Amino acid sequence: MGRLCDITRRLAEDPRDEGVLMNVTSGLMWFSAGIGGTLALALPGTSHDHLTVLLGLSLTAFAWGALLMSLRFPKPGTCLELRAVTTAVLIAVVGVALWATGGADSFLQPILLFTGLHVAYFYPPRLAFPLLLLFVATYATPLFYDASAIDDAYPARVLLFTVSLGSTYAIMRLLKRRLVAAEQHQRAMAERDALTGLANRRAFDSALLTAVEQRDRHGRSAALLLIDFDDFKAVNDTHGHPVGDEVLRTVAAACEPQVRGVDCLARIGGDEFAVIAPGAGAVGAERLAGALQTAIASAPHVSGIGPIAVTIAWATVPDDATTAEHLFRVADRRLMDRKRERKQHAPRRLRGGVRLRPLPRMP
Image (cartoon, rainbow, N blue to C red):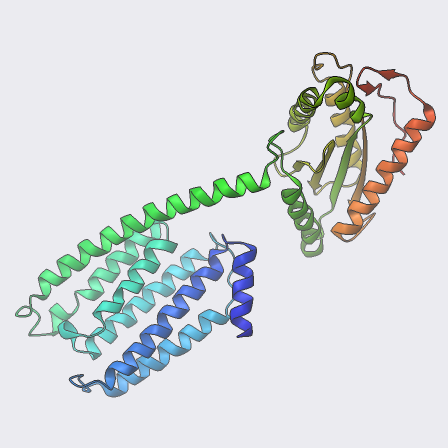
């Protein structure tokens, strides 16, 4: 029960974790085959000519299913070649099971659909096609050792099995593409800020946690930068929220070219932006902050609004903190300190903003 709960939790955390899903479905498939094969032996009319082999195959199915349910493979896209080799070996085991249960008259033939569906869903074409061809060849093996196969119209069954398998593969790939596209669209909607197109708070929290975890696993540094508008409330109060929204979009457009592809640029609040820069230390964070300030100050002016003024502060892992929560608190405290420092200097106000001053180096 505990293992099942762990599997359910992992699938809920990341529905794209096909490494877990692949194990679960394959494990259940082999459990079902073991149970079904054992029960079939007790039914009238079932041949017991190879009873020892059949019992051994049933035990193997149970054991393999249990092993699959206990393994923790990496995520999708990894170890697929090794998995394909394992599947090929198991298809050969299916061939032995067909022989032991009567060849052309085997009662196992209906459950072979499990293997076809499994290959079609989880393997890309470069691996699926050889596996499906091997599966068809295995299904056709009774033609070489079962004298009654021709009289039982087994060649026709092999042909229809091949057609069914090919059709199943094509349909499954089509349905999976639609499912993946829908999931990606939903994820994009759930992790994107509708106003600016940047990552939202949900995506930011996930990226921050990942950056800190990578530090724990690989010893990489990471920087968190917080960007807060100065007197943004005055923009909304004086010019209205549509103008304020345009300011936010302008700043987002100005910041995007300054960050790397691995960085996460997010809008985490009304007028708060943040950048997570994996691999960056204090020097990189300071350089990025300067580039962002320059880009924002040089951004096109929104109608009726002067230069856009922001305050930027940062913190790094592991120099300033070792957890995501602590890292954010340190960066936020520094941001508040810098904003208070600005107010003490009493800079001259502009329409909708505060003129940027040279900022002292971060402590």
